[in-house]
Image 1 (spheres, rainbow, N blue to C red):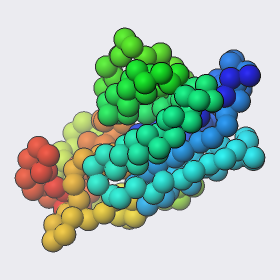
Image 2 (spheres, helix red, strand yellow):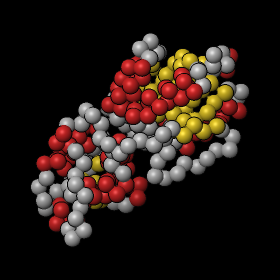
Image 3 (cartoon, rainbow, N blue to C red):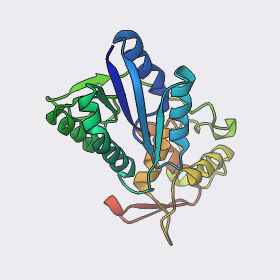
Image 4 (cartoon, helix red, strand yellow):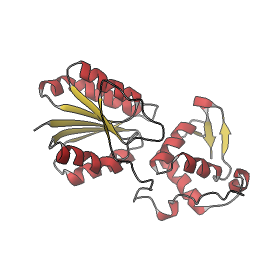
Length: 241
């Protein structure tokens, strides 16, 4: 029976795909998952969700959780270090390394592991921006996720209704909205505020994506946040709310 070592980027892939991932290896491939390493910097929330989903199906699974610093590619770096430390063992034991992520950095790590003689592939749910395919790697494309909010999210934090076409962003900013306030409060627990400023726009977008907002829904939501201001551009773009 083939042994699988999972390396999961919790900041890139939703725990909603855990069951599909497990079914693929256990049912379709009849493989045995021997270890799982999960990394994330979302204050442990996504890590905990992944661990819960995996252990609900495989109570005896060995799970190693890595809480990465809250910085760009923090989870990627943590997974790279963990994979590097265990690579020779995986090669010796003929285990298949499966990296669950769409990030280029980790896809490159899988390619390097394969070049070293390790059996490696990647798995993920594709997103709005297509991931560049790597001709040197086998890619497992998991079923697309339904755009829903996590079950643990309070009902008051449900996604705001679609914006009527006759309403402008300026009008929405002035509208008090309990649902918007609840989601804003949730965002503040998920991302770290920049010293003396607001929140990095990229962090806000990533957090909203994890809450089930696609690109259009994110834009509508941000337009409805009372008093939101934008500072800077590009990589330095900051949202103050």
